[in-house]
Length: 254
View 1: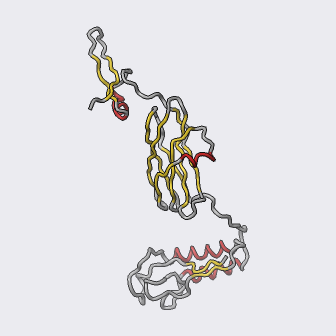
View 2 (view 1 turned 90 degrees about the vertical axis):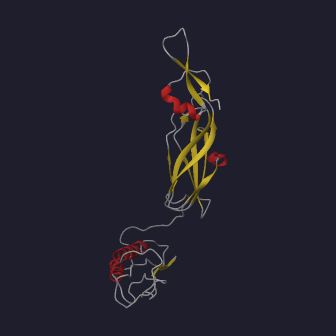
View 3 (view 1 turned 180 degrees about the horizontal axis):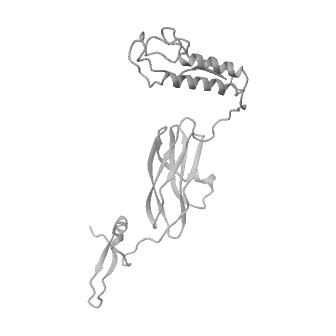
């Protein structure tokens, strides 16, 4: 491998001789020097890398070009010039730590999913949320599936949920129907947009579904919000023969 035109552009606002306005994010000269020196030490321990080239040796004058060189536009040395020379001398072209071997990623870089707890989930049509992230753009699919579903079959049961951009944390929602007294998981896959064959599968903890609410069952006023989410309201019964008030669920009448 030839690592060609490696460069971290630096801030030149304090230097004379440059023209035009900067059009990219830049780093400091000290940070550039540290990165370049570490790169030299890193690649000398990778047998697949034959050459590392920094771009360039002198800066371009216009900030619309490149200011990632070892020397500034006027020829003066940056800290990276001495740092690279020292790293080369230190290694002598030989690995000073341990050799590295390269292997391709098989899953999206930095892919992770966090699940909100599924508490008091009842039978019927439900919506669950989760948060997905990665250090590259990923396509997200998800579904509520039986907890016993084999991992190799999960991908065929999921539906598209959205796209998460690199280094973002996105909260997403998936809908599904669950049955009483059965166990389910929320399954999510992240697939690299650059290479969709790189896929990660994530599953929530299994959760067991409680029976759905029924008209006429006893209810508690403190749980009114929970009932309303399923189209019920907790009504007080008027009973002449009872001193203690009783409450029963009733469907909303619109």
